[in-house]
Length: 154
Image (tube, rainbow, N blue to C red; front, side, top):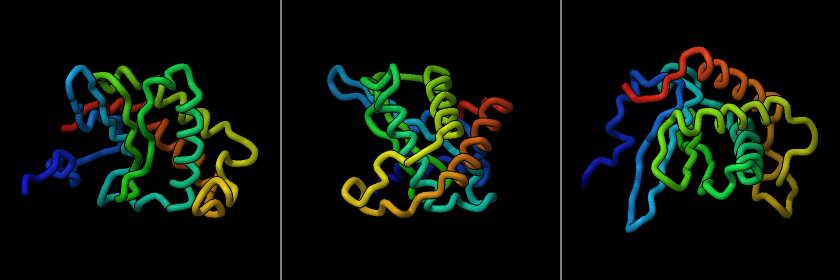
């Protein structure tokens, strides 16, 4: 079988950043998948699952309520636990979503209160949340984005 595009990226040299993972087109529709790489794969420890779950709930809530909500297709964690995928309609660059991503991170960092969707009737694993660690990872990633602006794979 043909190797999928994400497996052709050298993960031994991949640093935290905001990368276009792929652009898919069909007829007159384009969707762009972004790799929000929070940690350096195979170098840093993977993110803990409760924090990832909290980032997913808060990130998805923010994105589906922000000014660009009609462009959002999906936000969710990578299986390797080193980041998240963000999928939007249209052919976009990392620069096009930089402010959207940083605003999402600021929302997570500033969030207080009950985690959206963290009730038994709303989530299949509602109790596995960690807001403090979610904030830690969001702050770390925001700092990486602002200080290094890694926006393309090398």
